[in-house]
Structures are given as structure tokens and as C-alpha cells.
Amino acid sequence: MGKPLIQAVQNSPDVVLVQQEEFISLRTMCEKPLLFARRQGEDMQLSEEGSKSQSEELLSSDSGKFAPVVVTCHWDYPHDIAQCKEGLGWMFSNCDLVEPFERVKTALRTLHEQGVLSE
Image (tube, rainbow, N blue to C red; front, side, top):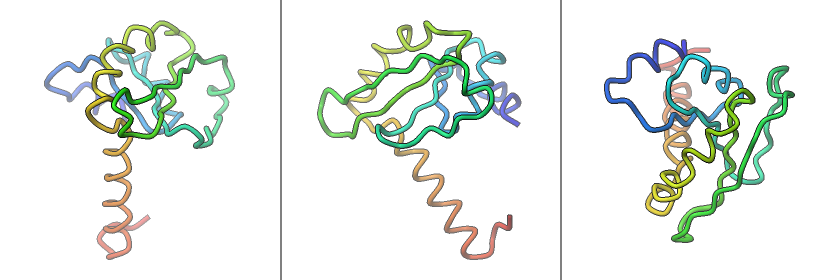
């Protein structure tokens, strides 16, 4: 499901952020860096692939408005974080990198509770 979503993007992003660790493997299907982003302190659920050595880095918001975020890259693309760090730093000083994922989760949970979505 992830590959068609990435291929359907009309404007090529500088980086793709994902909220689930198992989506890191989609990196092999993208031309651009793909990073798993989570709030500092959130546990990472290690899958079989996730047990491989992965690079990660803590990003802090220069503006101080947002809680720190840990970004993790695919083990075969260890330079993705360094390649994206400057752009993510600029973006993170202006907006919360993880908040859009939280908003989608809340919307889906609400739709499920209203019976619009089933499991």
C-alpha cells in the first residue's frame, strides 16, 4: 500500500516522513530520503527488520515551540538524516513534525467510534 501512495505524490518532496517503524522499508522504493519520526521518549516497536542497525538522531526545535523528535533512517541509507537535517531543522522551527500524524490518528479514531470505519 505504501509504494502506490509514494508514487502518487504529484510534487516530489525533499523527504518523506512516516510514523510507523515498519514503513522504513519503503525507502528502497523512493528516490528521496524517508525517515521515521517519533516524539522523544516514545518507544520504538522493533520489527525483525527494525532490529538491524539504524541511524537515528534527536532533533530539537530551534524555536523551542515543539517537543524534540527522533528521526530514524533505513539501515541501507545511513546518510538520509544528514542530507535532510538542515531542511528538517528549518521546518521544525516553524511547525511540529509529528502533529499531522497525531491529527490523522485522532480523526480515524473518531470515525471508528462513530461507526463510520470498522476494523
